[in-house]
Structure formats: structure tokens, C-alpha cells
Amino acid sequence: MQFVTSEAAPARMPHDADEHVHSPGRTEVAPAPSYPAQTLAAAGDLLRALAAPVRIALVLELRAAPRCVHELVAALGVAQPLISQHLRVLKSAGVVAGERHGREVVYRLVDEHLAHIVVDAVTHAQEDGPADRRNRS
Image (tube, rainbow, N blue to C red; front, top):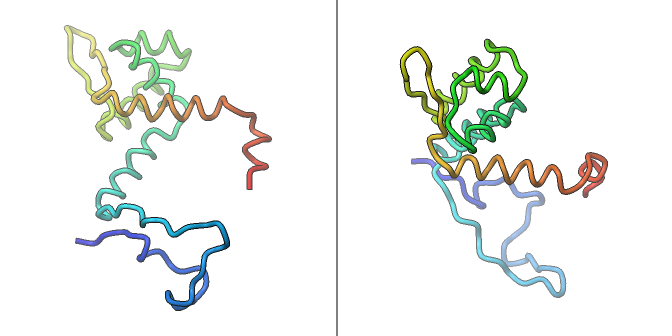
């Protein structure tokens, strides 16, 4: 099984490990934990599934309560076919699940952890303006 570790990342400058010296005042740090490449790929797939404004809004709505499509259409002001398309993406990524109740399908979040990812991203985006984010170094 392939693992991605800090050693697998390409070095910025070729050097001998024995010759590397940190800047004064900077101490040696432990390497970050390594994860199987398959796990990292799955995490990337999940983040891509969440990476659309309508899907972020859907997760925030479903975080509050399970909802059917017409409730999501009304809450977000987005056309029903577009809501259904985004729900399919979220469902195939394992973010939401649907349960039929008569003629309606009620959607819910599969895992509250995913809502935390979205809430944290939205909170972070609100912390400072777009100009501040562009000017970070």
C-alpha cells in the first residue's frame, strides 16, 4: 500500500540531512502523521463534492434539519433541477442520504462531521475580506 509522508514530498533544495540547520530560535519538529494514498484521495473526493456554493448551502440547510427537495428549493431560491443535481453529487459522495416518505424524498446529512467542515470553512471565509485573503503571504 502506498503512503504519502513528508519524505515522499519533493525536496525544495537538494541537501544532505546531516548538513541541514534550522534558523536560530527554530526547533526541530516531529514529522506529520502519514496516511495511505487511498485515504488522501477519498478526502480529496469529499472536499471536491463540497466545493460548490449551492452544495455548501445544502449542507448548511440539512444541518438544521432533514428536508425534502421542495423545502430546499424554497430555502435557497434555486431551481428544483439544480437542487436535485447537487443532491445527487452529495449523495454519491456519501454526504447526504435520502429516505422516501410517500411521494417525497427527505434528505439528511449522513455524518455531522461533514457539517463541521462546511461551518468551519464558512466561518473562516467570513473572518476577513477577499482582499485580505489575496494579500496573505
